[in-house]
Length: 341
Ligand code: MG
Image 1: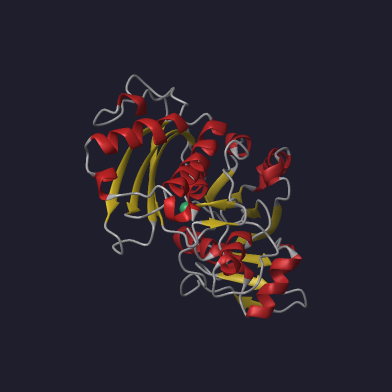
Image 2 (image 1 turned 90 degrees about the vertical axis):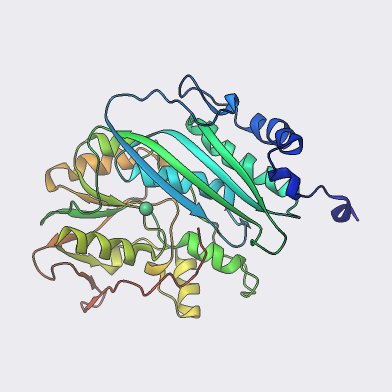
């Protein structure tokens, strides 16, 4: 009965008139209270934002989020949308400075779910002191969209931007925590899998946890292992950098419950997405300093050196197994779990 009486999104909510104004003024704006980016921000409802930038190189990233289901153990599409974009800035070596958020929502979508999603995005931003500077709301007809899509654009500033193509021979490869949690949490949350996830998603912003490690200047390359997981991230880094990577299977952190369920389902934990981890290439002489910096933050305290780059197998990734065998860790064909972000 309550569901029947529930307020729902209608075409008018995206039609640019009084109904949309009321939605934005009463249900959206009050959630995004942190405003410190510049002279014209979200609350001005102008055609764009004007942002004051600290000195450095501008880093910009954008991402659309279509995760299914919208709410999952450890998070929801709102938390994921802002976190994913923050993390893309961070792995470029940038400090997040401002964010934008576009919402495309289906007619009939419960207003309370929309509010819950936005509240959750706002919480991440407010914890980081990161202002939402501008946004957009559009409504599509019933059946024209699967619920809701969020697009976020992140603006950051880097003293020395870090790319995923900067690995050099002799660099150490570090992963900041256990891999595969997000992919496993989403997989289990899908209706088609009648298993409760043994873990929640690892979705978490990598800033400020990585700030100190970035400041050491010892990181040569960095990537967040999202779609395609660790296997995709390592392969992309090796190929773009023109070096080989050799990793030791025993050193790769995977939670036993994730590994167990992967074995049962015939999946590789190295191909499952993470949303709160980073893969780093680190210069030999800075390794200790970078590891010490990572250990000081709870989110990255379980960081592990998992391998090293080499002149051999240029552009490829080799996995050394516990029993001494070697095999290529291939680039996945695609993520084993679609729509994970
Ligand atoms: Mg990325």
